[in-house]
Length: 289
Ligand code: FPP
Ligand code: MG
Image (spheres, protein in one colour):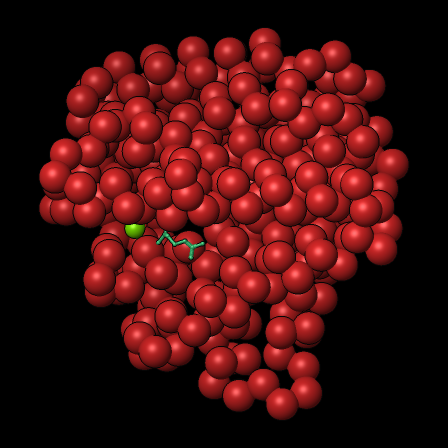
């Protein structure tokens, strides 16, 4: 089955588990709204691409890993958009969850998605206990403290923000979880896949920073200029747009070079290079192509 379909099916199955039976209807609706239609599903696609490169001998585990990472990503976006953080009106081209459903349901929808992610991974124990234990640990460390996305967000509460550590925790950690979990789901040694996730996470962050400076708001589906307005580190602000593009290209080359030997190395390298294009604003991806 196509990777996109596998991801959507696994997310739908998770949504059914969370909203079945007597779930309060507004919470069920907010969860559906937060998950569908999704964005580019960059992280779960990366997870499945790595699993495929490693042989994908337990696709149900790979689907669980990929969908748990997307559930956590969606949870983090709901919370990130709240008034106490970025106070964003829009996300993926529609009102943010708290704008559509109110703050209490947005907080609860994020909470429910976090729990759903770990329930999804827990269900994998019936398939392979050892791999599932490792997957739970990889994903938990990418999300919580001391260096996961919660820690990354918490840097924004400090008086000064170290840009590299901040971006690695806030963005890179979930990309590393995607590559490492994809590998482990297919029975490969996960640690060898960390560098690929780190380089891709950094390149995604640089692309996001470029977009935050120069993209068209309609194309992006979320506000632009937020880093400047909120006093956040922005790599394109620090390096200039062409400097940031140069760094992005170098990171993608390093990402490809870091791919460990595996049966699907060539196809994965191709995936890495083509999947970066949609990150960029259209006028730049035409120039950078
Ligand atoms: C988007 O960054 C936000 C994140 C990458 C992480 C946000 C993390 C939290 C709110 C911590 C809570 C975590 C969970 C799992 C609920 P951005 O504001 O730079 O990007 P944007 O332009 O897409 O908003
Ligand atoms: Mg934000």
